[in-house]
Length: 272
Ligand code: C2E
Ligand code: MG
Ligand code: MG
Ligand code: MG
Image (cartoon, rainbow, N blue to C red):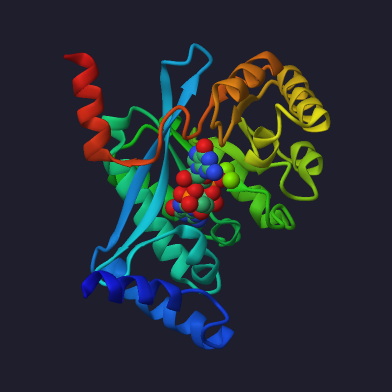
């Protein structure tokens, strides 16, 4: 019965079921509680170097393990968290946890919402958590999605520059998914470009997508910036992405997001 209730409740998280505003308030209340009840978890997905075996970093991806509703995907709650201070609380929870796991991970990427980046005290709070965790900033990459309007204002740009000054690496995530990709490249010296997985998905079939990926890599080489391809699902895609000049690779074909405990056992098994 528990399972059935869980499945039914997941449906309740889809908008349209309740009025938009009621749905938002419902999820917001539940999420606020989830942070306090420690119902959030991080899964980590490896990012590999071109040799196909060296893990250079892990991306932290938040999961909401609801007691009744089961696993809830970030796509279903980040947007709602972004409508209030909840995104700041969530972001700080994620950073604190990811940096706590940094000794085992070696290097970590965390997603930061453009809404967080807009806060005038963002970098101050970020730096405080780095210090609290005694984390090496050079081992931390902040991923900022460009799929929503991003560097609209000076606050965002200044915060990115301050992050870099701390030694933190800055990645532009979902590159090509928005409408201003090249504009962002002109306005800020990113350390990493993460090519949106929609280009990766079609690289074998669509000549234009393949050309765009090559062109991004070409630009990146002369800047220079690292280029990570996300959403690599097949060996064919991997081969084409390497040929295009990508320097990092992430996707189900190379490793699924997993809890730290399972990564650690994989590492131990490999070492044994
Ligand atoms: P993202 O940052 O672009 O993360 C990559 C997403 O692609 C993840 O989805 C990952 O599980 C998925 N993915 C990885 N490899 C593959 C693949 O080969 N094929 C396909 N189809 N998908 C793949 P996930 O975990 O559901 O996260 C979705 C988005 O939610 C993230 O996209 C990110 O924008 C956001 N997100 C996740 N965690 C956080 C967080 O802690 N804070 C914030 N602000 N946003 C987060
Ligand atoms: Mg990301
Ligand atoms: Mg991405
Ligand atoms: Mg993406």
